[in-house]
Length: 283
Ligand code: ATR
Image (tube, rainbow, N blue to C red; front, top):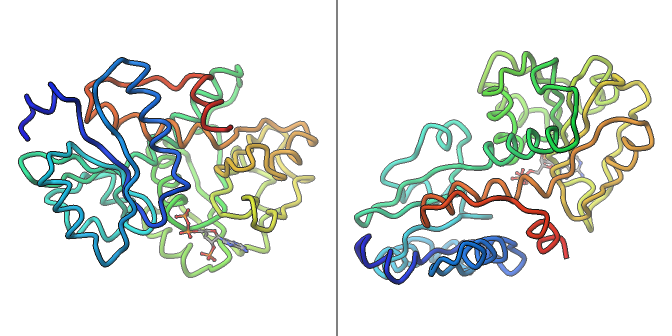
């Protein structure tokens, strides 16, 4: 389908993953399509790894404009892309694909979503605090951590202290920039004394997972504590930070903001994150 036809009948878009039933992306994109009165279509497609190439070829042949990519395809989709933008290359994963003239163009919007959420939250709640006021402590070294580190480096954070259960994985991520220093997972409480920002990118604290154990009693009183886990929204880490009178940022905004650039690419409108959308996704 050419662009003119796509405009007439609306952009055909999707999220691909395996499993996919849990994905909030259809809820978000269909909310925006409805909100902006656009004729597009967004669905969740369960694609097992062995069918990736065949099923993606089908999307191309069926006139899809693009799709989001989630677990387990964020890395393997890169092999099918004709071009991968600089951000996705640096992060090492693609979560947003645009199809043009039968070719796949890969991007990564997770770092954008991560930073936009922090900035919006800080603005909304009138924080007298900036991301680059001092060192950031990042817990975790998976895909989410890579996006967070990339975003923080772009925001000129002076130093990133990285801690991960498996130190080797953290050391690998630290190759991204000289400003990243790896320390032992066991030293997480010590790392907070001079930190300006703490973010949990691990799955600890997520529903069904053990809580993240970290002693906040020696944390810099002006630190901001962010958990990218959004189920539950108020994780034990954020509850403990609240009790210690520290500023906190919840994780739901990252999910919502990372979806915006893809929607713009496919539908031509940069959508807003509203309280109504946030409530819809959280219920
Ligand atoms: P994502 O792409 O969402 O970041 P991931 O790549 O599976 O997911 O990364 C999960 C992160 O949570 C990793 O940093 C992982 O630590 P390891 O690299 O050592 O596996 C971390 N994590 C998961 N369970 C953990 C646990 N019980 N204790 C400490 N860290 C844990």
